[in-house]
Image 1 (tube, helix red, strand yellow):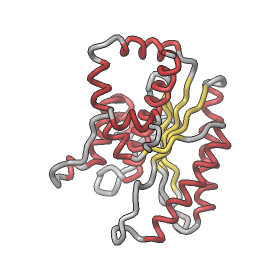
Image 2 (image 1 turned 60 degrees about the vertical axis):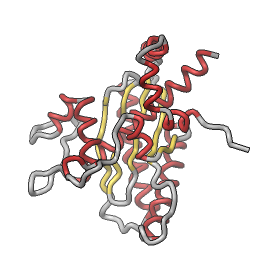
Image 3 (image 1 turned 30 degrees about the horizontal axis):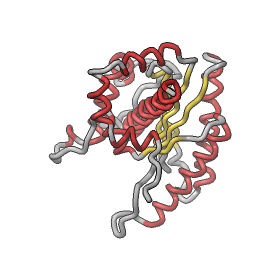
Image 4 (image 1 turned 45 degrees about the vertical axis):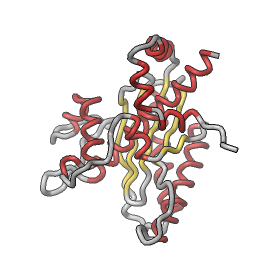
Length: 247
C-alpha cells in the first residue's frame, strides 16, 4: 500500500507542471492574494556543514532580509556538539535581530537534507555520520529556538523546483553551484551586486567572501544554497496555506 504523499513531496515532484498550470488558471491570483494577506513571515534556510553553515532569511514576499555564513572550521569535524552549539548561538543572534525588526513575525525553517541514500565507496563513512549527527543537532536546536519543526529538503529537489538542474557538461561556469548563485543574483540583483564587491555592507547582508584569486569563496555558495532552501520552504508554506484556504 502506497504511503500518503506530503505537500512538500508533491511540490517537488510536480514543480514544472505546477508552474505551467499557474500561468493559465486563477490559482496564481489566489496565491498572490494569499501572499498579500499573509502576516509577517520570516523563512530561515540553512545549508548545514561541519566547516561552514550558510543561512538566508526571506520575508513573506520572498525578499531576502538577512544572510551570511557561520564559520566552524576551527572545530574538528568530529566535534559535532561544539559545532551545533556554535550554529545555535549564532542563530540566536539572528533571531534576536529579526525580532527587533519584526516582533510579531511567524518563523518557518527549512534545512538542506544531507543525502537521500548511502552509496558504498562514494563517501567516507565517518563524514556521513558526522554530518547526519550535526544535521540532527541543528534541527533540534531550530525546533526549540523558533518553535517550529524544520522542513528537510534534498538540495536537488529544491533546485529542481526552480528549474535548476545538474549540468550536462563539465564546464565550471555551468556547475550546479554557479547555477544556484546565478539564480540568487537574478532574484536579488542589487543585493548580490553589492555583496559581490569590495564595499561596506550592512551587518544583516555582509559581503561575499573571496579567495586570493578573486573568485567567490565556498561560503558565498553556501549562502546561495541556503537561499534556495529558504525560497523553496516559503513555497511549501504557502502551498499548505492555499490548500487549507481552498478547504
